[in-house]
Length: 430
Image 1 (tube, rainbow, N blue to C red):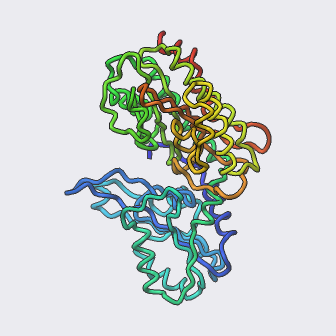
Image 2: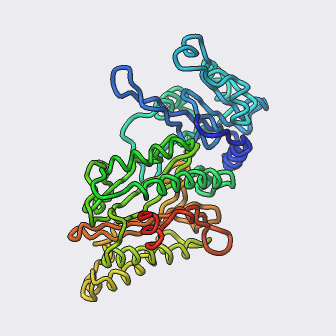
Image 3: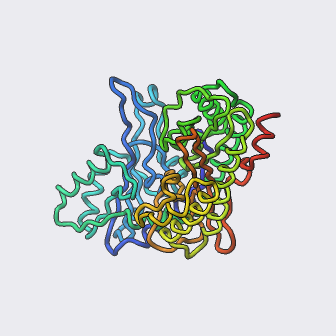
């Protein structure tokens, strides 16, 4: 791994929290992700399943975590199964974690080779009444293939049909949504790497530059700072492209007079950052670009103040909608007639601001986190209002990552990333 080692005390805390929420006489199993092929003998870079990483810190394929707090033997209460290195693997891939290294990473004392799993699991199932399976129930989940976890679940349900089954997701949704201090530090590291990338491109962007060249500059800066790269597919969108919310082709030339929307974020140690900035290709805002930009910035600043303990997700977005409506009226994009005939399901402001303002962020860019209970301290959210005007080839979005505080306004993890018009113009024209 490129990132520096993480104290295993973080993963020990996470396991304790999870096990405290389990039902009596139950065990939970977490599998690593598959390595995916592109065809022939080529594979995609491995990405660890975030849940097993959250609970163990193990960043290696073919690993299984088993938690059984009520097991008869103390050595069975936390168990990690990892792939054993052989001579072939050592030569062609490099050695995998040995048992002492797996303990050092995870804090788990009971380490076994993966080949022992079936035998041990069979023994533990004679003690357990309930089994927690790891399902993906994220509200934006994209399940398009059978995962290693899916295959495991199908196998054990067929083999042990008399057991009771529970889902790990409701527990993890609560736990992962509220970050430990160590996690916030890792997200801050990812944000700081993103800042370096953004400052790098401010001196690089000019008319005629290709969007993919800007993507390459970010990638260079991220990699040289111990990041694996982008936390998500980057959006480098100039001119009209910025009005396409998930534009990822990044293959157009940046035109003099256009604005350039940059939705990018570095990952660090599997933790995400998520930044959006919108800058003038030629280094100078027009009066119209500036007025729209500052309207978006005002909404972002005011929305930030609402992210405090006790705020409800739905009510927050309603309030942000009111802020945006006011700004769109001021810009002349809406009038009173638009407001009077708006639908409650699709308010008038949605014509120019059609996405949500915030989402949980952490191990996943759209992270696990409760949406139907009050916000809590140490939740990490994005704040990303935008205004999109296709007829003007103009799309502006601004986004920071913030941590809800027990008291006061949120901590902005991107406070050092330039955002004010004057600072951006100054940095682009040095």
